[in-house]
Image (cartoon, rainbow, N blue to C red; front, side, top):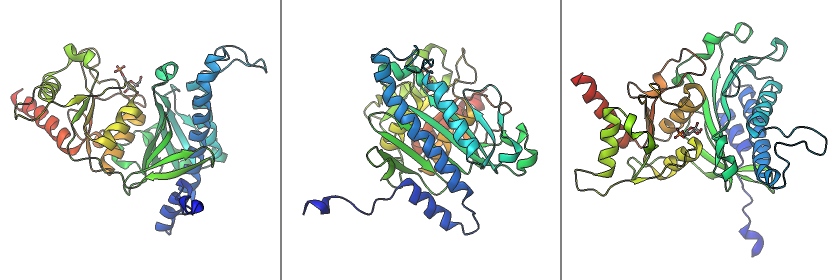
Length: 339
Ligand code: P6P
């Protein structure tokens, strides 16, 4: 009868992470505590993003609110929430945020063994038109939390312990990998819990979609131009691929992960290193793609092998379905051979 329709064995992100913790008997739960603080940050931002539209509508945004406080810009607010949540977790020693020029070294009295690199609200320029935006994060282990230096942060992406994103759109979806595959959780606002809705996500081996800003076409290098040409005018008689580009990385990557295909932000004459940042955009999304059976390439190497030299370094990125990225790698290898 009716009550049976309600599932009662809901797997929440908290239970999922605790199950993961139980798989590693030696873990003392630090990671679980860290993740719970990241989940809190995502819930807070989801609520603020949903209200932002309304605030804008009724003229609160950008003006003083009833307490006479200046309404904060959402990306500034989101950054503050994540910094405060991560510091107060007592499980981090250094933080890198897209919003902060310098890394944040946590008060030695409050330090834990993790480093978190994050973009608190990626794609925030899309807020006013209601396009999905998101938080992206990557988590590293720091050897000696009491003597942590910037060098400890500049690790190759393959050293990440976990990565994920939270997409604030028609629903709030948190996609996470702790190194054992990829799982998607959807926020049930009535419960205030993220419920497992996309268990063990695997990206299709080959896709029918390519995702790139065609407006940069005149600046592309040969291999990128050739790949996009092949998407539009296939030589093997297969149908052309569809172009889908939202201009918000979390939304474009989430669609690529679920439907397959390839997302590209290549280098071009204007931006020789592309536009996307290594530590908190390229690495987390590349980690997720590999965990889901896809791959990620910079035009020169496997994205997760890259060793950044600066915390806001950029890199070109080609990520998504394994076979599609393999095609791009072949085109770049041919160019390298002929040059
Ligand atoms: P373009 C948003 O500003 C962002 O950082 C990513 O979310 C998105 O993928 C990219 O830039 C879009 O850049 O140059 O195509 O507008």
